[in-house]
Amino acid sequence: MPVIKVKDNESFEQAMKRFKKTCEKAGILTELRRREYYDKPSIRKKKKAAASRKRALKKIRRMAR
Image 1 (cartoon, rainbow, N blue to C red):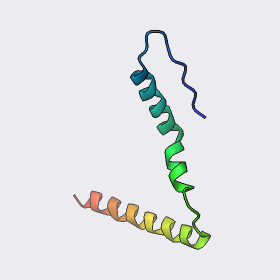
Image 2 (spheres, rainbow, N blue to C red; image 1 turned 60 degrees about the horizontal axis):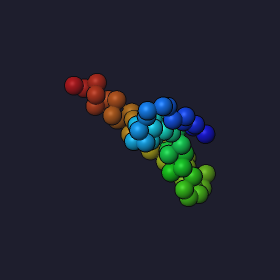
Image 3 (spheres, helix red, strand yellow; image 1 turned 90 degrees about the vertical axis):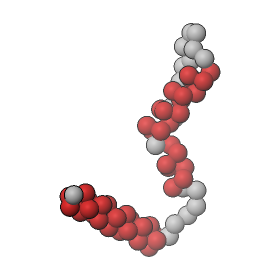
Image 4 (spheres, rainbow, N blue to C red; image 1 turned 135 degrees about the horizontal axis):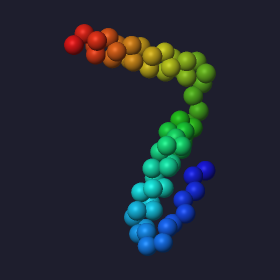
């Protein structure tokens, strides 16, 4: 759980920006989106394999240049 202490003479916008940045680093939003609905283990495995294939193709395309 990210905690932000507002500094003296710091505007709300700056504090909010710092809070959002720490949340992003902690991976809270990605975890929230992942848990938004239940995936069966078989579907999770298929998604993982598809992501792996996509990364491999991207790597091959990058090396071809």
